[in-house]
Amino acid sequence: MKLIAFRALQGDSFLLQSGDTNILVDAGMPNTFGQISAALSGRSLTAVFISHVDYDHLGALFNLIKEAPILVKHSVFYMNTPHLATEYQGEEVGFKHGDSLQELLIKCNKSFQPLSKGRILDFKDIEIEVLWPTPSINEELYKNWNSSKILEENQYTYLKRQQNNGDIINKSSLVLLLSYKDNSILFLGDSHPETICKSLMDKGYSNTSPLKLDLLKLSHHGSKHNTSIELLRLIRCDNFYISTNGGKYGHPDKELIELIQSYAVESKKIINVYLNYDIEIDIKEKCTIELTMLKFKNQNELEFI
Image 1 (cartoon, rainbow, N blue to C red):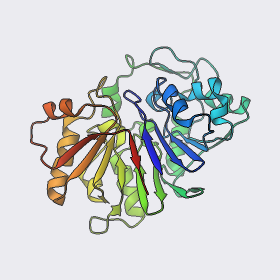
Image 2: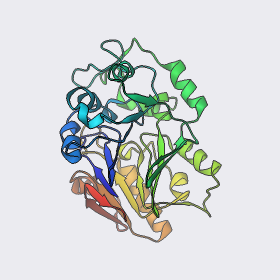
Image 3: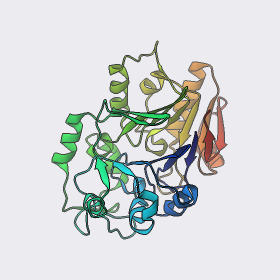
Image 4: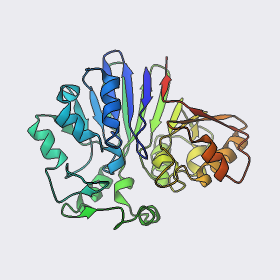
């Protein structure tokens, strides 16, 4: 199985390919469209997972549906959203103007399904288990949705959202555990660490019996607010992935990188930190401790056998 991490600016977009199975996990910013199209080479996506409705996770989706229908001809879309506007200007996410994504999918006769904790999906040799959100969190998302509001970054700042523990959009982000043969990958979207911890502990994982992974896609592009030492101790993994170009919000945060370094020292193991942009120098310059246990790799494609 091949994993491709697209250069989605400050966003997320991953393609998983095995045989004739092609699974997209998030769609990144609009610039990601060309990369996705090139990687597929005319083949249809089997499934599209949208972790949550932040613009940097779905910006290219409308292009895929409208401009390259062959790429989504046989796709099933998995997402949790009552309404989502398709028209955007700059980096706005509009909920008032334009058709909703849901309406667009209906118009194009596309199948779409909500997801909640406990659902298991099989795609031949790839299995995906939904670890989060719970049905009650989805209910909270729907109740708090304001379909007439326009979210602009200069009105509702990134920092304000990060400091707001009640941020239901990120709180409801999909957490997906992918299994392929003997390999396991955990996609965290922009989820909160306490919710991931709860989900893992509900499945019986603990500090003494952690979840073994081959790759962990860190939450929220390496934000200091979305990873905790408690979470890392519930997981045994030597390979972390951070998706960001380092611009806009300065991700990954130095606190997150230094946390991983401390965890690596505690675990007495070298940790590979994979990046989809060449930002290793920038990361090291902003950290105040030596990152002796971290090995950075600017690598967009990974193979799992």
